[in-house]
Image (cartoon, rainbow, N blue to C red; front, side):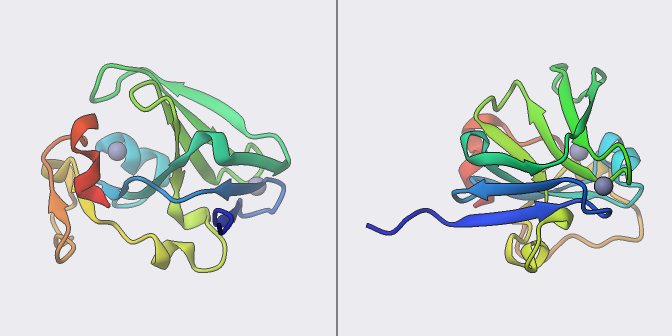
Amino acid sequence: MSSPAVYSASCLCGAIKLSLEGEPSVQGACHCNNCQKVSGAACSTNAMFPLAGLKIVSGEPKVYTVTNTGSGKPVQLNFCGTCSSPLWTYSERRPDRAIIKTGVLDDAGLSKFDPKGETFTTQRATWLKPIEGAVQLERGVPVQQAPVFK
Ligand SMILES: [Zn+2]
Ligand SMILES: [Zn+2]
């Protein structure tokens, strides 16, 4: 029996380091306006790792709760209060998941966990093309459809 994979993530200044055990259940790019604000970019790229496998190795993330979400359920953004890197999102819709921003994964995790689907495509920047082969959804991922993003 092989032990589960362990990945690591860190913020820009290095104060916060995370370790993640297990594999993500969903890999996606989100084009919603909230993700654009949080990332300061066209979209956020996310991978839903098991929350039980998330360990904070060093530092203490700050938390901001967003209430105007697409689902109406609040989500908590965990980020570095020193350098502002977004780290992961917690959503009541998926209480067993840590929705990691893949840009903070170490060891080329951004490429390894490529988006299998795109959400809120109606809010996608007009100059950005759909990712080839990725499922296209006009809203978020219905919880029961999560497997299409794997
Ligand atoms: Zn930092
Ligand atoms: Zn989003």
